[in-house]
Image (cartoon, rainbow over all chains, first blue to last red):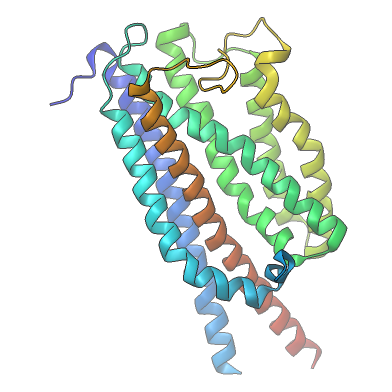
Length: 47
Length: 241
C-alpha cells in the first residue's frame, strides 16, 4: 500500500479534481462529436 | 503536397479519421502512464508527497499557455488566409485550454496551502494565469454570442491577439518580477538539471501525454465543428430553396 504521509488529503484532492475535470472534458468532447455526427447523418439521409 | 491542403474540410476529415485511433491510443498510454508513474515516485525531502502534484500541475500549466499560442497561430491563419478549418480549430482548442488552466490553478492552490500556507496569493504568475483563464472563458463566450460564424472568427481572432500578452506573461512572469512566491521553471535547458531524474522522467512522459491528449481532443472537437458547420450550411441552403 502506498504511503502518502501527512499530505495524503492534499495529493488525493489534486488528483481527484484533475481526474474529474479531464473526464468531464473527454465526455463532453465525445458526446458532442457523436451528436454532431448523428445530426448530420440524419439530415443527409432525409434529403 | 502543401500543408494548406488540410485547410480543405474534406481532406482534413479523411486524414484525421485514420490518424485518430493511433493518437487516442498513444495519448491514453502516455498521459495515464506518466501520471501513474509520477504518483508512484518517492517523497521529496522538502515537499513530502505533495511533489506528486507536479505531474499534473506542470503539464497542465504548459498546455494552458501553449494552447493559447496554438489558438493565436490558427487565428492569424484565419485573419490572413481565411481558412475556415483554422478558425474552427482555434474554437475547438479553447475549452481544452480553459480546463488545462483550471487544472493548473486548482492543483497549484491545493499544493500551495500546505507548502506556502495559503491557497492563493496575488503573485505575478498566479494572477496572470487567472487572467489567462478569464480570457479563455471570454473567448468561448464570444464564439457563443456572435451568430455569424465568420464575424465570430474575426472577433475572437482579435481577442486571441490581445490575450496572447497574458499567455506570454504567464510564462515569463517569474522572470519579470522577483517578488512573487512562485518558483522558476521546474525544467530548464539553460540552467542544467534542477530536478532529480526520479521525478524528471515521469514528468517528461506526463508532459508528452498531456500534449498528445490535447492533439487527440483537438482533432475530435475540430471534426465536430466541421460537421456542425456543414449541417448549418445544408439547412441554410434548404431554407433558401
